[in-house]
Image: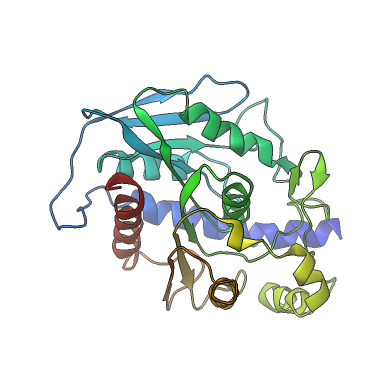
Length: 296
């Protein structure tokens, strides 16, 4: 089992590195009305409890909204820096966090990560005078999509959500079949992939998701999210069936009469999207947070 888990996450890590390369390649963005936004911002290391994070703070008059940003199986600062640059320039502060491997205080791998760690990022936002604590969002993707959804479900202070290449359930850890996530000392209910060395990774995900009873236990309570949701998926995803899971999330929320907006946009690309789609996706993310947080 441990060997299969390692093989599974090697695929995630390769796609995560490619995604980071695409994100970092674009440095100029436009606002929702087509005007270039070049608001100056400062970057500083956060010193708050055991949170390992950076603050990207726009230099503007008045309070600004904030977005908590973190990656998936790539433990690096790349996603935090990319989100910090693209959103701070548009008047939105970013708390970019890492949560494994990047600091001696952090777990060495994506295993048994406490959700309380991410909640501390919200607590920190409330200590920053320039941040409006009533306008906080979260953005993440791939393996980080699990923590992004869980954070918004567990803490009603999250008012807006963006998830790329989503999962509708929690999964086991990077090196262990135990859940990747914990809350209040207990494992978040999760799924594991079947031991089938002859199947592709994608086929193994479909097999795991075909067990409706286990899926029901591991599926997130999306209706508890306290704000609008934007999902961006890849139709030719060879890591996991993100578009199918996104469609299931939308259907689930419609059945639950979700009171906020839920938008799902898919692209005919692989898990890491592409250089051609990156500018549109990034602009869509910026526009979502401008509409749901900055201009509120």
